[in-house]
Image 1: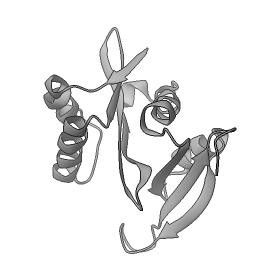
Image 2 (image 1 turned 180 degrees about the horizontal axis):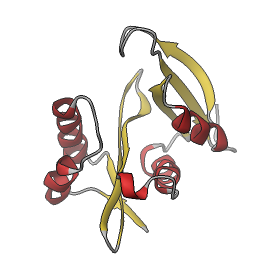
Image 3 (image 1 turned 180 degrees about the vertical axis):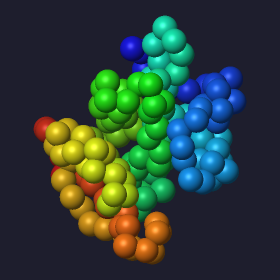
Image 4 (image 1 turned 120 degrees about the horizontal axis):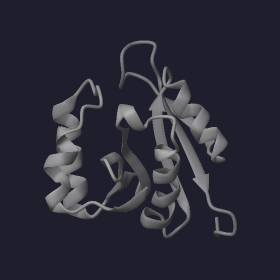
Length: 145
C-alpha cells in the first residue's frame, strides 16, 4: 500500500467511493476543500484507492482530521492506521493531532487507543440524539508542549 497527497485529479474518484456515509453532499464538499488546500491523503494499492484522510486547522487552529474513510473491502487491514500515522507527518509540524468519531464507532475508538490517542472531550447535538461526538488527541513523543 502507498500513501500520497491527493491531487485535484483524484477528487472525482474520492467522491465516487461508496463508504455508506449518511451525508454524502457534506463529505463531497469537505473532500473538495481539503484536496484544493493540500489537506488530503490517499491510501492505494494495485486495485485502486483503499481509503483517504482529510485534515485542516479549523479546530481551534489545531490540526484536526475531518474525514477518514476506508473502502469496505479494505477495512480491518491497517489502512486507517497507516493514514493516521502518515497524517501526523503531513499535517502536524507541531506534532499534535485531534480526531473525532461518533460514540457508536467503537472500532475507531479502539484504533485510536491502540495508536496512543487520549480522550479529550465530547460534543453533543452534532449527531443523532444520544450519540456523542468523541474528541481524541495525540502528541508525538519528543514534541514540545
